[in-house]
Each structure stands twice: as C-alpha cells, then as structure tokens.
Image (cartoon, rainbow, N blue to C red; front, side, top):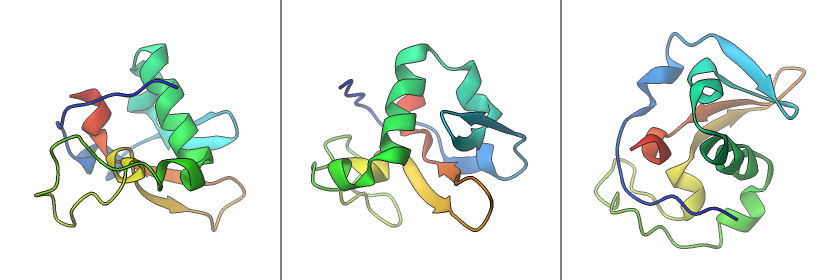
Length: 96
C-alpha cells in the first residue's frame, strides 16, 4: 500500500466536477490527471474504508473541520451511494 502524507488542498474540486469512473467508482476528473500512485490510494480508500478507518491520521490535518479521525478521512470526504455507481467526494490531502 502507498501512504501519502502532508496536508494540502480542499474538496473544492468536487463542487463543479465532471466525473470519471475508475475501477467501478466515480471520482472528479481531477483524479484522472494525478500520478498513478495517487490514483491507486484514492481508489483503495474509496473501496476499502474498513481498512483505512482503523489507521490513524498522521497528515497534520487534526485542525480541519471536521478533524480527520482516521487515514480514510485524509482521502474521502463522502461517498454517495444513491446512483448506479458510488460517487466519491475527495479530500485533496493526497494532492499536497
């Protein structure tokens, strides 16, 4: 697994995003422009919250509102499961 550290960015990329499907999950198109290792960790986070929710956040974003509780929060703000495929609202920490 790849671990990305450092805080940077916000979820502004989600507000007017066009969407791309990667490995059965929709993401804002900004993710498709990221390096492959960054794409890999965001896809992993979206598909395996049960793993990352048990890993503490060490990214330095404890002052975020709401604060990051686990490594999952460093990558995913929210997953909307109401459509045919899950749509992920990103936390752009991994782009920093």
